[in-house]
Image 1 (cartoon, one colour):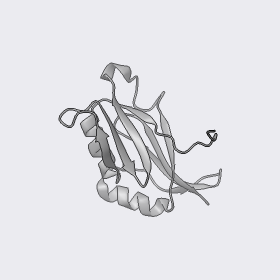
Image 2 (cartoon, rainbow, N blue to C red):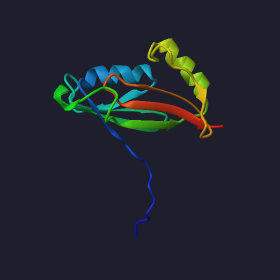
Image 3 (cartoon, rainbow, N blue to C red):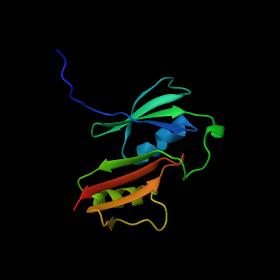
Image 4 (cartoon, helix red, strand yellow):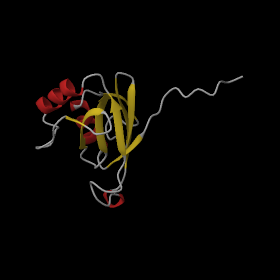
Length: 125
């Protein structure tokens, strides 16, 4: 008999260029877990601390806009301030972004990846 427990979720992010997306997520501290073709991947996965994201090639025509109708991911992290500093040093945090306390009780920061997928990193206060 199988239990009804969920064990993980592995979102599939649409990307225009899988190798470029792998390099971007490596700057976020992820490591490539697999790629369907090492020379010219169209599907790959990246992993950090057991959190796995899949990256799937899509034609540029599939993307309407970088910041509308986009996938949004919320990562629960221990220390958003330290992570923000790490990402600033990597040059991936856009100008003007900060870590903030929200009215809904979190400490967080957010930005978009190069393909318009929203990334929020937070902890409850």
